[in-house]
Length: 240
Image (cartoon, rainbow, N blue to C red; front, side):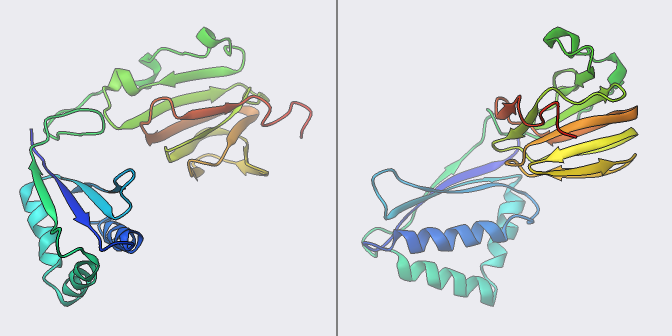
């Protein structure tokens, strides 16, 4: 498998762990759009407020080397100097080089694909008692996706989803493929037309209602199994 990983342990001068963590979090933010950075996670050792760990995962050694080139720029050198000034001189940074092997959250790369027609995916709505509301086809397992969630949903004319839901971690994008309707997002209701796309932040609760032609939706999100929170009273039946 491809990939390069490492742990970095930084020990701040007594009482300066928060400052050190803030600097490293800013460094992480600067890496969000850097090609090849798969993970840059800043952690604090439990019970040791001045010990800060960074967990890194890179697509390749070349990607890691390219990131280090940024530290050689004037701005990068200034950032290094700020971090160094916060470190305990008696405890220099420690580094452990890693060879990623696999596991949850790790995408090893490689060449592969899956071709599937969404109509061939099992309609799960009848299984959970919602067949009268419409259709719900969840394609993650049939497609063999590792980090992406995909579902195809249809609401029958005039039908409102039986519950609202939000996520604890997953950002979600919903595209209206056909029909019409409305969506309730927290305390706001918006109309929908074909090819409308809506991005939902994890904490936003939402539910859809079909218009007279019904409503067809395609849903994409990062896969976070078990992080959905249901709200059966989100959109009361009497609300219009």
